[in-house]
Length: 383
Image (cartoon, rainbow, N blue to C red; front, side, top):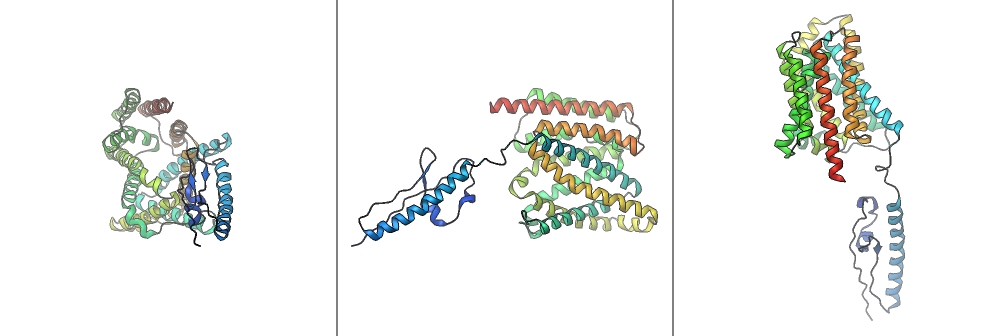
């Protein structure tokens, strides 16, 4: 007598459940079906043959055990959706503000000692890639998943990141920190423009009013500025444009690839690129010939501190974006800009002129209005 066991199943993952978390065997996938209520069930054809019945009972028992594991995992709270404590948010926001200010102030101080932006970037990026590599070496949770050979598929990401960071650094080299926020004041308008052109995202009237206020702050700050060379303002506008391209273009890569892998590959390649460019432009040669003694020691010490701050800034920024809302993030950016301007006056001996004060205020108020308006639109749309 012959008998036939029929297993009819299709697996559909539960809501908010990653199917990869529960794939233990191919048999487990081939023997489950999800009904309209979202509960898994098994279907077997009946047979009078004792051997078939024994096989059927054995398979059923194993499947029921696997299903119990699935249901238990489904009932577990999602750690990503769990409420974040206020203490965590406070440390994330405060750390991002502190390290961002440190990076800007220390970079400007290093450039005041030795005007070698490419050499500085090369060292910082090499330091960052080394720190990420050491973290992977001693971590039991995170491991490297992408190799440097993957750079070919990340060429657009690497290009826009290098372009954006080099532009920002050269802008900082030609303008004082107290004017840095104003010189890059067109970042928000450029981002809105590129989002419309590339992503077809439209901006309503109220958020656009905040954008107009930002443009007014930029125009007011630049129009009455007589202490900054035109090249600094031009680099500020160019830096705003390249940063806007960066913010719009890299979203795809951030969601598709692990963050640490992107940081490592980008930092390693940018370090080599900036070093080669420093050699080709004779920046490295002039630095070696002209810098000696205590000047070189001071530059190296500041460079170490800025590189360490830059590494922690990457971690703090990603953490803040993860645990806070866009409104909280933009408010922290505004607070950082004000503190950064005041610290530039206190520690770098810069002068805060009237046009810079009004320009920064208009840019920050416009940015906050735009952010609050967009957040209101988001809540209305999701209601």
